[in-house]
Amino acid sequence: MFTSKCARCMEMVGAGPECSSCKRKFHYPCGGITERGFERLGSGRTSWLCTTCRDASQTGLEVSGLEEASANTPMGKKISSGLPAETRAPSTSTSGQSAEIGDNMTKVLNDMSAKITSIQTEMKIVREIQQDLQQMKSDISSLRDSVNTRLDQLVNRVDEIESRVFIVETLRDEIDTLKAQVNAVLEEGHKNEQWVRRSNIQINGVPQKNGENLVRIIKTLAEYSNFPLQPDTDIDFVTRVAVKNDVEGKKPRPIILKMQSRYKKDDFLTSLRKLKDVKASDIGFSGINSRIYFNDHLSPRNKNLFQKAKLKAKEKNYAFCWVRNCTIMVRKSEKSPVLHITSEESLKKIT
Image (cartoon, rainbow, N blue to C red; front, side):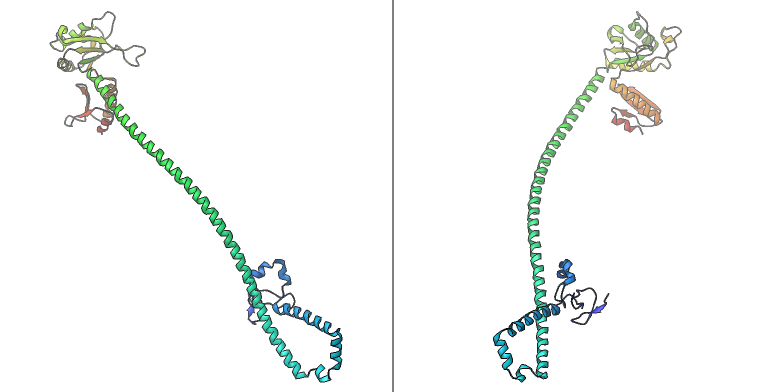
């Protein structure tokens, strides 16, 4: 807010320097100082003098000293006493002209002094700016060196990471290749496990007792199913196998029948499956009505797969799930296509 007039340009002035002697306010340029230069005076701002008061103070000291020195010299005294009255005391008009000339000269000197002060202040600011720029250049140079060093470190780090990534990718490719090879070996092993069982029939539910004759039981089953079996030439071997997780042994162990011919085995199994709800009592085990089941002899992997297929088929309301020629098959209805289940992945077919 403007509160007074500038003592030089007579325009309204708000914030600006105030002379500690004449108490007049100025615009910063009119007072011969920049705002930054005035702020730099700090506590010295309270004793700041405008150019007029500063020059008047200096001129008064110089004139008073000169007059005193001249008056005290012999020549000064002689000149003063020997001059005529007109010379010693100038006229009023001459005095007025001299005063006007002195005022004009004082104004010119004040203007020059203000400009010089302003130039000096600006030069001081320029020197400070130059020092700041020099410091900035030094800081930038240090920063550039630091950045370049850090950049070199990062480049080296990136090169190291890229090298490691390449090694990792190479190892990943090798691992994928090894996985594929292992899976192929495992799959081949599963096929071989099932292949050696291709001529086997698994019979569940036949009661077990000491001193039993398994060949006689097989002959009885063949007669009961009207299959022309020649035990001496058709049977390779027959035995019971342990059931996994059957610790107490409450259930009779399954009978595994290995036929000499796969085709003979398929025909015998087909005949056995035609027996509906055959019981132990039907083949000579009096009073025992447990059911007897006939299936292909599956490998452990295919047994597990068969159980999963049955569970999922039941969940999805499939009507049929069975094994034929050691292959697991499911069918939703009598008119639906048959789905072959050969792996865990193929279970997704049951939808």
